[in-house]
Length: 161
Image (cartoon, rainbow, N blue to C red; front, side, top):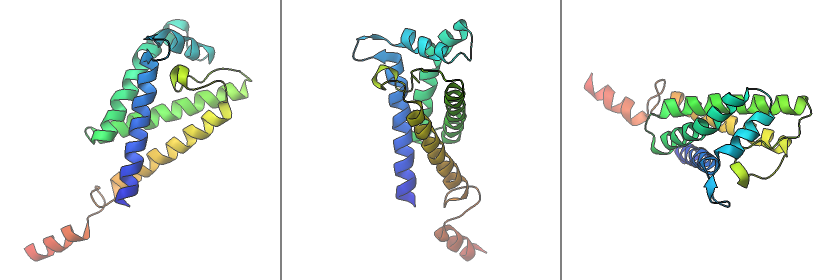
């Protein structure tokens, strides 16, 4: 269980660090990626243009910081919560785009992420939400969570009484 939790935490954390990084800097084009990401956000028709620009500038940094929090287990609960909320928002945005018949680039991985395969992006977001839910449950009920104790801890406390 610990190995699975570690692998899931590392995978999701690094995925969000990568996703944020390629939205900050377009490696292929050698330039800032925020202008194109702002266009990708605006194409969803959920926020006004000025809000799309602000999101394009700040959202990648939030993803990077939350991903680092997962990888390093520093501010872990906060990083997990931020990524779960972002995952729900991203999933909702993709669902509404599919329902409205919009043919948009999700912008999930900047310009490296490919085109407009929204069903694939939706599947990926649902899988990420599942992984984040697993991490939240493992954190709360696992051996070091608030609701559970490892057997060694229980045994050591029995000897104290």
